[in-house]
Amino acid sequence: MKWILLLLLLNFYPKENMKEIYRFSSQSNLTEWRIVNDGVMGGISKSDLLLNNEGHGQFSGHVSLENNGGFASIQLNQSTTIPDKTKYIVLRVKGDGKQYEFRLKNDLYQSVSYVHLFKTSGEWETIRLAIGEFYPQYFGRKLNRPNFNYKNIEQISFLISNKKEEDFKLLIDNISMN
Image (cartoon, rainbow, N blue to C red):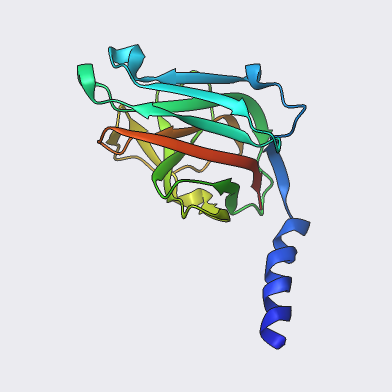
């Protein structure tokens, strides 16, 4: 019994200190999001973002390695201040067992993205990504610079690039900080 109570407390406690960045719902305006696939470099990967029947964002498609391709992504430009005590980006997602990247930019016009990998289990899960562990990356190469240490976020994105041809599907409920 005490284990059940402990699990319930751990499940509900972090929500009190959450600051929501984005929540998908049946009223979400998907035109706020932009699809960026490897076609910008000649590739032919395809992806889409839609709302499923439950109101969750569904990022899905096919990653192709043809024509030097190999990635698909969605991006949202949205200015968000990071409260001082914030340590994590929290994702509520249901994936397909594949690995994805969650990316941050503190300036829309910077070429560097700050990346954190996460693997999905095939079930709904809450994934906590330590903000201080987002590392700088440029065109798939890790840079020798400090990790993310800014007080604001201007862009968030999800990306899949596992160096193999594959179909993918990631359901997204919400993105928060705590």
